[in-house]
Length: 347
Length: 262
Image (cartoon, rainbow over all chains, first blue to last red; front, side, top):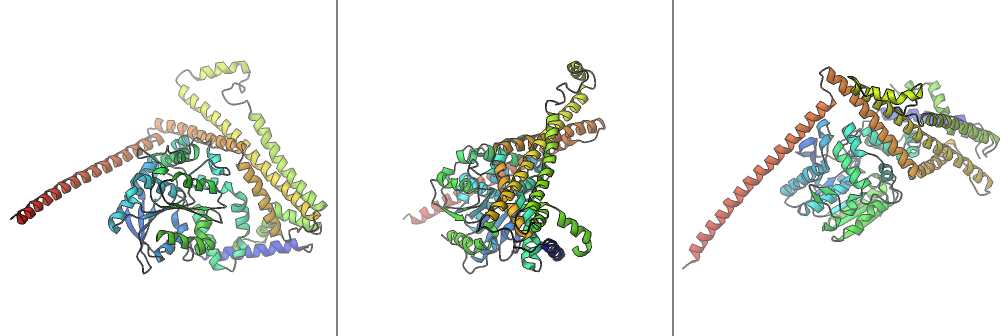
């Protein structure tokens, strides 16, 4: 039992540590380019670029094209040297390409899923194939996983193997709060009225899914990082990543929310991209589907549904004990999950 | 400027007093570390705060119910309302009046939807605190139970209890409806403000939102057409290349056949 009268002392100590942590944070730079050096390999329309991270291992492996979500910036995959999925792939000998979607500008409000998938993504995959002499393996993350699946269905010749990380496929599963909240929103009208959807709005929605943890808990524990510069730096980088989001191109956002979250069109085969229906059953490439067991954004059943619908391809899945972000940044992921991804890609 | 310079003692004291947990912790300490009268009083004070806010929201919602502009209740006497509505749709200012009425109606729907969402959230916060109080009581009654040993630990208990209640709300039909209604009402309100602004700018012969969007749409169309024609030029070039290569292959074959023949 605690001695009465300790309340003031405990709070004072907490406040002193908070002040120290804030002072130390003020001295730390937060670079959002990521930890691994890269070259800008190609410039595409609408501000998109293709980055190339050179292979570092002695053994040369197939190129990997990382397809990230439109919702956040991709530097979460390269947060620090110790926690970098991209670096791990480079170290294994893969030339790694990352399609950076950029930040939509005013006129990009008319960009559709077809522009993103059949235009930018298909173009990047083709450029890699032309220059590397073989089609890349695709590593799709969250919404990027949906895009990767669509590309594999539309242009099978441009994809060798496919890794999907925390990718929503069935948006009608129990516990999918994001999908439930989306059901009665008029996304087309919102896109028409707001133009590109402001990042602050989306960030607000994501934070509102876990407000106690992401607001009350996260900052209340910040003082614990005082005197631990590396941990504080990681905290600040993650903090920057969480809120350094691009606006969403209006038409593509409305299309994605309506077709996937309201109509579940990827699952039932009615999603159309470039005038063609995306049928998961048509995909023939080997697939490694990774989901997080405590994912509150893409619940496990939402991701695992892929397995029941890709009957034509060799399919494996990996369950990771952690949350949505844990798949990229947790120590456990880098110790256990990433080596398995690297090993699967070598197959 | 260092944080220690920016935040003086007064700020630190106010930070310490902010939020429900330091107050609850102080009460728990006053009760000797086990929930007692001080703790119960602290919880009651928090419930009272939340109840006051909830009553305010419910009063607002009840006041707004059935009073949507255009429904006629704001006219005095009420029987004049339909005539006034009709009159407003006549004459040279009917568009402007119509836009104003739409904005009023949108604002009304937004306020209603907002109060509905806020009430749902406040009820959840209250339920989370009630759970925390119950859990503290159960831990105190359980001979093997352990109570929070620090303010930080109590904070974690509160986060877990509050988040669980919040999670339950997110999974409910009530929240899906309230959230959808608020989002749509916000869109509608912004849209009606845009319409007002657009009309004003048009009268001043200044470019408005519609003009910008129209320009952007044409720009995107032009880009798509350019990419399409660039693609077809590339295909034409490839076709020509294939034809040339076929011809070359045919020539080589003929030459080779010439060599092979005796």
